[in-house]
Image 1 (cartoon, rainbow, N blue to C red):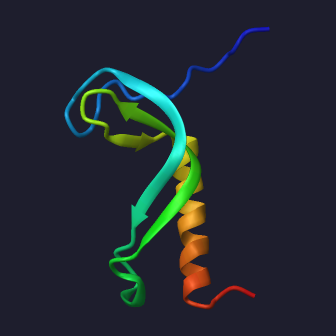
Image 2: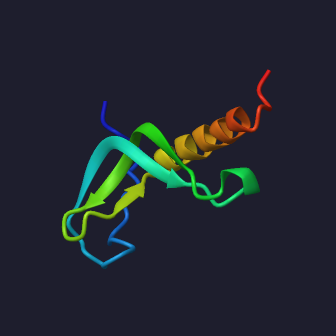
Image 3: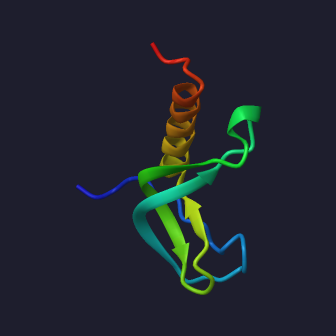
Length: 85
């Protein structure tokens, strides 16, 4: 039985408007801008589904990849601030 839903793929790169995008599973760096004690730090989220622009190398998370990034960043912030049980 075939797929019934289409893959979510952006049409162009949000950085350079390039159309040559390749799907990758890789580490995605997230610079932290809040809260105050963590400003300037960076969290690396492993094995994120991304679209990589072949023209400029810009990484754009897929919807599932963006959800994983949000979960992992929140967990990392809680860990560094000592809010985990």
